[in-house]
Amino acid sequence: MSSTIPTSSENPLHPQVKEDGANSKVKESERLARNDEERAQIYARKESIRKSFDPVLLNRLRAQIEFYFSPQNLSRDTYLRSLLMYKFYPTGAAPLLIIASFPKVRSLCAGDLPVNIAPPADAALVARSLDGSEVVAVSPDNAWIICLFPTPPLLPMTRQRIKLPAQRFVQSARETIPSNTKKN
Image (cartoon, rainbow, N blue to C red):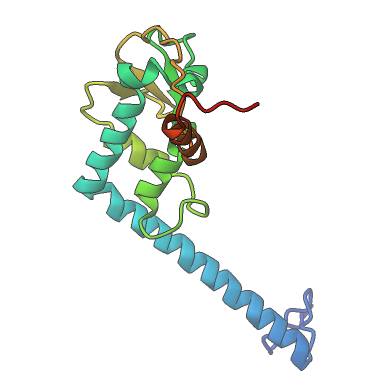
């Protein structure tokens, strides 16, 4: 029994369809788009690796996050306090990914990109920046930023009245009008 083996590069199970000019251009543009996406991903990975060794960036990230979790800030910051979970960590812990999406953290990691289009900071980069911190620690699974100090009591909000320029003008005008002048 003899079998016939195709001699050309054609696969008998998947015959090649001849493409017209328009289809080939679309497929070529799709291939280029995929290549651009792959290049962007590779660039992002290389940038992340480069940033993870940048001591200036790591120090700035640590300083910013240590400020967020400082007793002075936690005594006023109701939003961050609302993120703190006490179930597994008695001093409180906040999700690392949410802290990485804070605008200041994003702007530190984004470099030249505007904050509104900058992606959240890389979680591994944020976790690495917190190595050796005396204010916070990162959970073993890199999912939580743990406060190392007990959460301070919330300070009452002191409302200071801010005088707008128009209010200042009215007040200064009242002060300049003689008191003996009255409207009838």
